[in-house]
Length: 181
Image (tube, rainbow, N blue to C red; front, side, top):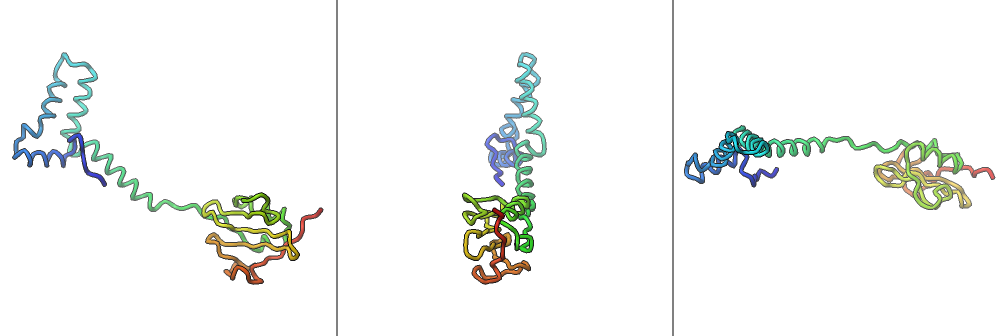
């Protein structure tokens, strides 16, 4: 929190000025005296009197407007730490296995995944997590052994039961069906 007050309005600044001025109350509160004079001057414009009134209220308050703003900013920053992060879409490998690339595309997009690349259905790209940016579903339909991969939100490859497995393991390759022609 930055407690500096370039305009001399905070209670802490007034206390520091009072000490620096050697306990001279007049020198410490000269701005307040001037504001009071403007506020009670019948020749001063309405805007000048209103500004002096606000300034005087700020001077006499136990805390200044700036102090309140700083405290509000600190409170907001504190609670921002506890803001819930959006959850990643749930993808069940069983929902992907034995499906066609078109069905996988529909499942991935309906769950909230983002298609990336020129054509994720044919293996040219993937479906990524909108919160983490990591690949979640990869579809390899243009090979001798058509298959798909499903990753968790952290990017770990999953088997059909949702267990973490090595990327190149046979369990990480979920069988898929070709799209009808």
